[in-house]
Length: 260
Image 1 (cartoon, rainbow, N blue to C red):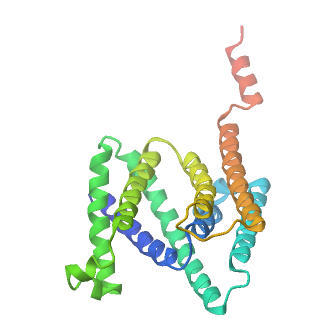
Image 2 (image 1 turned 90 degrees about the vertical axis):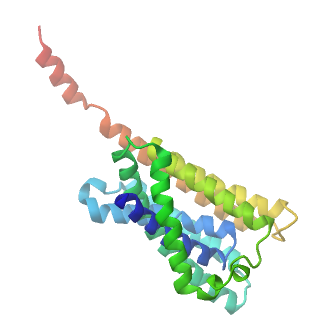
Image 3 (image 1 turned 45 degrees about the vertical axis):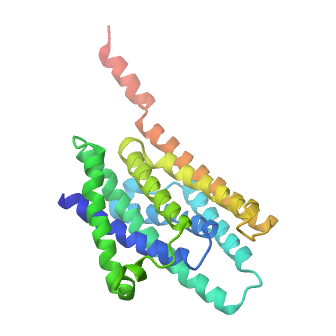
């Protein structure tokens, strides 16, 4: 209970940063900036684990290309904007990067804890985590937005069908993410999030609720980010497979030891 409660509190801080940043930018921009977690995770793991987590030159090249692609995308999105929009974008970008730091740290702890306590059913782990998650979210709201919690009318002001759909989608997303962390690994999770960027972008173009127009430069920058993320996770997977494969010298030694 103590372990998963701490994880829930960390995720609550990440949610607060996420909601703050998404209030100042659209979903596609947020998802593209969120891909910076690969860069931050690589630096974080290198600092914590040392040489064993050092990236190869090809991986660093992919991370650099990813960073350049994100910069191109943000420049294309903010081109011709007013100074107020640009300052809001900078502030939102800072919140996104802070959210990435918190999420990377929480994901590392959650990954290990979900597997360490695998004897517990997933729904028990999620209940322990969500209890502190929701409670600490209320504490954050009480600190930063106390007027919202004064009365039910203030708390539920502006709620509609779209709000309920957002709550349901975030709940499903959280359960699926935790299931992936416990059962699978982060490779498929990162690939899915990269594809989600393209889906969100086209939804904003095709759905009548949005007024976004198709722009070639923005689309190409987004595709650059998606392909770079996909290349990086495949490189990481290939390097892991090579490290687990026995070397020729080891195989030869084993055969010699078996001998006639």
